[in-house]
Image (cartoon, rainbow, N blue to C red; front, top):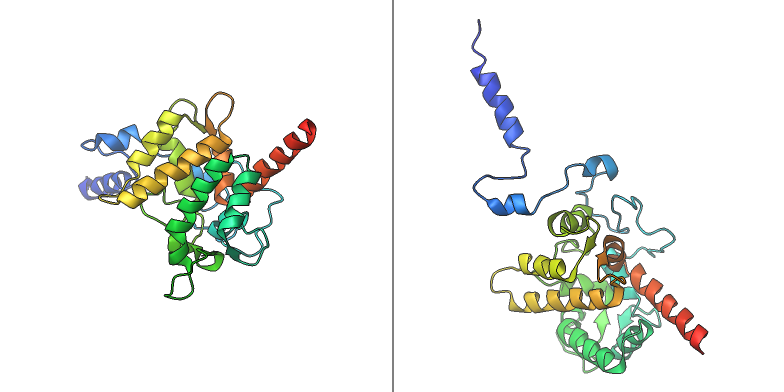
Length: 247
């Protein structure tokens, strides 16, 4: 009989190469990955420039117009009130007001966002006293310690959205509690990235306030639609309907 040890070793190496859990790294067992993505979403690892798909929305948000902008650009375009490619502080203020936040929160968010992001997006080295944010260069304002769902050019990586929920949504598979959300942002931190830690907590905290449901959970659909900006459009429309009914 022939010696099959070489073939067996090859098969074992092939099997080991596909494992997502390492025995001596318990964290890999605690934060599980979905193994069926390829069967539900074509090429989930491929970064999408124009759409934000997931396993339930393989073509992204139905009816949402990308206008040939990257997904990251679409994310911030809601705040460009005059659609000229530049977001000024007063436009951001109005955008947050349209989303239903009170005046004090709108002022705080506006100052924080433009103070942190404006200079990185400017087309010149000279700072601007108006603190504009240029949508064309919004990828330059991407910070560390985030989920990695946007790549460095502002494309959307579906598998990283799915990983958020497979790793941290332990109570309900398609929803995050506040505790799970906090755990997720802690787990995404890069060493000594104090700005990134703070920015991530703030961004996810604002999202939680905006889109949590009546049970205090943040749904996967809300998170996905945050990435392409369609969540902002939806929430603003809901605020208009509420205002018209109470007027």
